Length: 328
Image 1 (cartoon, helix red, strand yellow):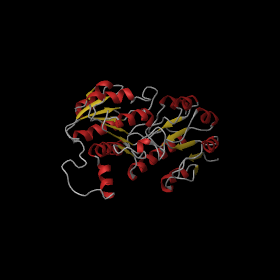
Image 2 (cartoon, one colour):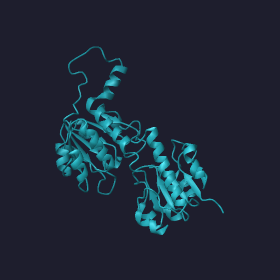
Image 3 (cartoon, helix red, strand yellow):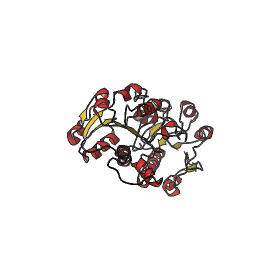
Image 4 (tube, helix red, strand yellow):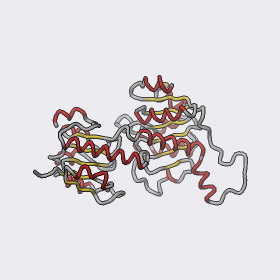
């Protein structure tokens, strides 16, 4: 009996893929940083039983409708806006992701961005590297305190709750906005629910962790930034398209907010000459929220385990479209 075919869209460590090779014919795209071209991915999908994909891979209706043997798309991310989940469900294809295993690591990075922006640490590092430090002055590169300030978290999922937990260590007041109340976070972390407008008006630090949906597209626009404190720091570690980047740049240039820390962008990789990268009060990172060796390894292992389970006729550990399980 011919083994099922599994296609992996980036080069991953062989030792992590070994469990799949025991039960399937596995092929990997040969590059780690360069994404597989869409047409190549589409061709491989036509004979694949399983795909292990990255957030940058477009898994659209056209691809899914031609993937007649496909049983699962295992996405190496907590998000899945790169996948047409509705089309996958219609085709009886499971979509899985990697929640939970990356919450702590992404929360660490998110809070690091907050600290970097508040205390102007990147500026300070460049200041000394560029031989600008010629003496001490009372307000040299003075930033803003984080402790005892108000943090506003938009999107109180697993990562949001973990960021809130970090905030308690800084004695911060915690506001959050979410589609539904999180009574556990309110009870255990002292978080307080607020409307979106109330949160962006009152918070000293606005942290965006909401998923990208039709409702959250451009949620942070010119009007939203105008309502924030002039001393506010904005952090986005969710999806780039949640933010109107031109409006963000304008808000910082005109002093409507103080600074921003960004790990995600509308276009990734962002162009080196993008104006966002030239402003000293904007800290930009190349979408590395979950990028620790331990966490990325755990994410790959979870994807591999989900694929193994489906190939053996079992239910994967994490499912985005649970309604499709009945079709397996």
